[in-house]
Image 1 (cartoon, rainbow, N blue to C red):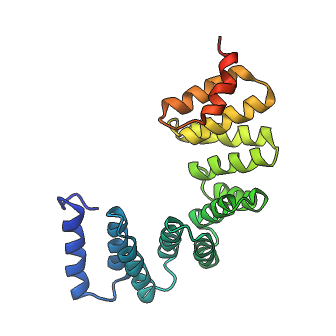
Image 2: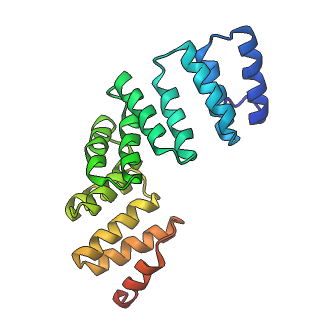
Image 3: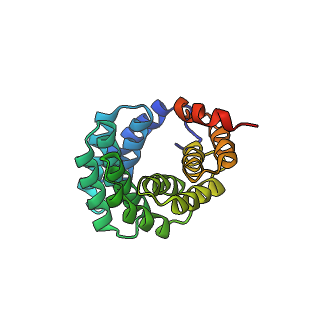
Length: 208
């Protein structure tokens, strides 16, 4: 939202006024959708993103945002379809690749998720969520070293990213490196991430 607006409501009103003058402006519809998301008005956001696509059918960002709305509703298939469409339109759009991987993870298919997540980080070397999700997928696949490498990269990019520390704690625990498991679990807690109490319980005897 531009700094010239005092509130999201004011920004929405401004975009609506602009759309009365230029109803075919895809960018205004898209920005309106983003503004509605900020207000958690998902139905209105969805409507705005579809209007953006009517004006600009290849706007991949709108497909990704619609995928996010679908995920919010718990509709994994719709989220997958929308992000797949975005990736077909723009094969080098890292966010779509990462989202496809994330949907496969949510569906419990980590093997399917891994190639999409690897492609996402190849396209965007600073895509912290993709690294963290890849770490989870690799952990579930039994690739502890891969999990540690991806998790370490995630916290290099974003030192306060709790889920990555949690993944590292799990991987080090599985390896039997209790000191590093404790260290990373504590770092996860310090970021505000809610670490599974069972993990903390398991690590308790290994604290010095």
